[in-house]
Image 1: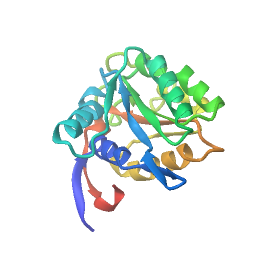
Image 2 (image 1 turned 90 degrees about the vertical axis):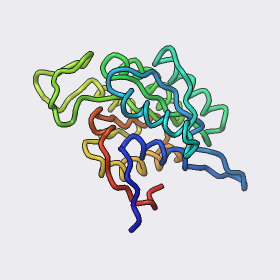
Image 3 (image 1 turned 120 degrees about the vertical axis):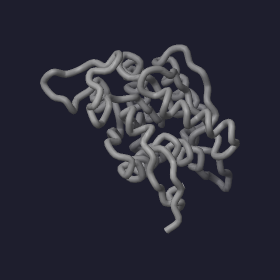
Image 4 (image 1 turned 180 degrees about the horizontal axis):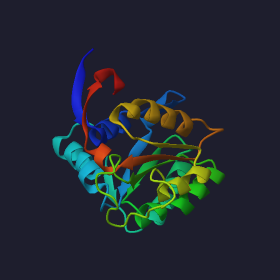
Length: 206
């Protein structure tokens, strides 16, 4: 099986850039781009992957600068509504309060069955650095973060603890996002160390 070595974030960007919807013989990109506010937790992962895709011209997923996390999710939901749920935008934010600002937008998208992909940054999966800047800890459980607040407002929720978990997670995410009955906010929590971890991906994944 042919493979390509990429970080988890690079693989995610390449996958999202190659997803399409089709209706009445017309195809369009499922993900028209990615809103993002970069900081602790996503600048060295998703941020670098988006920049590299843009600069190399391969699998480009357009990046749009946002100024408020809640507003970017509302904008993505509005875009999905105007595109008849055939296209949407991804949204990424830094760990802690940056990510929790997206919760209200996620609830709106799910209630109104509007497809939106949320990529909140999360704690270090290895827990080598704990706590980290702006991380909100739960002293009762080391595997809980504020991103668990997305669970009740998401149609699909997952946390990527290992690179090899990504294919199943994103395929489930796309399945929900393209289902007109079950669609809504989809949340994939991305631990910051996993984002930057290299892995040999099967080329057929893309």
